[in-house]
Length: 580
Image 1: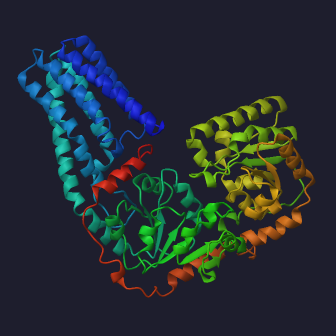
Image 2 (image 1 turned 45 degrees about the vertical axis):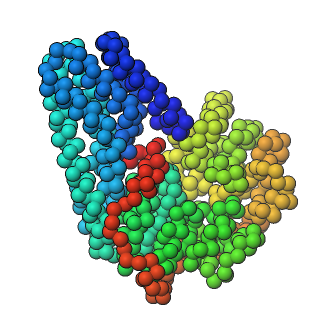
Image 3 (image 1 turned 90 degrees about the vertical axis):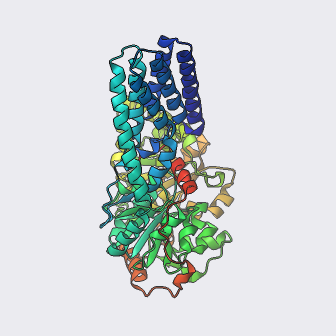
């Protein structure tokens, strides 16, 4: 259910209220009303399981409501002529549901995601059966309640409950055994696999896109590597992107267990809050890549100073730290280009037909919100009025943000209406996702974007682009804070007339020379023929170098204890809206 925490709270409160009414109706011997309320709770609970129905995160979900409807079914059965032993089984079902949250903590602790790791072959059926246990309790509660009005169903429900209890008991015993040994098994398998590079990723659901942009280029390094994530949903999402081993280290104990002697380099693709947990292992060389190179504050975050090496695309990546008062020693930086852009073709003619509008998202914080999407219809209308065929490609995170979804729908409606009237083949919605970003760049003749890594990457093509200005900065301050704007036609996103004027300049285009100069400044003055190889060689050099002179005592001996329940509960909360 994707309604946010408030929506989930209201949904749960409604279920609990209906379940209490079901118990009351059963106690007052209003069998019909009790069965209707019981059915309503069971159906609504089932609807909540519709996504990722087998996911372990569902275990214990809506436990209060399900316990209450089990009590209601028990009361109804006790008032009927059903055999006494079936009533005892109905009581057992209530106990199973009531104690499910305690079992859930044990199962989650033992169900640590480990994907494609050679030598790790631990069978854990409970790890993908949380939803099945919940569904079984719903079915059994329904059969128990119906057994009160049609007695032959009571033994069926009772036998089903006994079988359910046996399976849950066996899986719980298995989880209890696995919880105590999984850390050592993961550590031993990693030692045998002997990775030299750890790619460390942390963040909420959806963060995997930050790693996706680097996977192809990391594979070219041709050194053994492993992806370590700090969250369960992120581990499962990353595992769907790559065949490389992916291991979740949800707690500090589990993070300690993935540190093996073969590791030389740890690579980071964002400035996640948990990065410091791994940087403390000083026998590794810690390298920050970031997932994009732009003039946003995230590209000159002061926490970047804690890394041993900072890879940047060009000199602009170094200068922006100093320009914003962030002091990082010059020797930490490596200019490696931006390998993601090597497939972008340079402008080869003056065609002006197809434009891509690629607004960024709202950001996690107000100072990082440069998104123009709320003025998307103003921008797109200016493009349509100037005769452009539009490809509309919003940021992936905007697709999970309710206000942004409405803005996206408004742009889609505008494009659909124009296509019907003009016959122009605009690309948006599902069709826009069929091409990757580089393919979209190559299919376009110009770009409209916000302050983000998108226009910085597009600079490699040397094609013209408009930069939508968001916020209170005037032109001079905007150029000072975002030097890339020197290569763009800048217009306030909310100003229709100014935007129309900037769009018109895409056709006349008098900034080609400026874009060529800034391409070298932002993306590195590197040979085009071997552009992508610079990054690969830089990583190999760090991996193959002698390990830093640090004492292993700085972080102690790897621990093989059990994970902390509080940390696991926090990990579960991150996965509330993500399929496992």
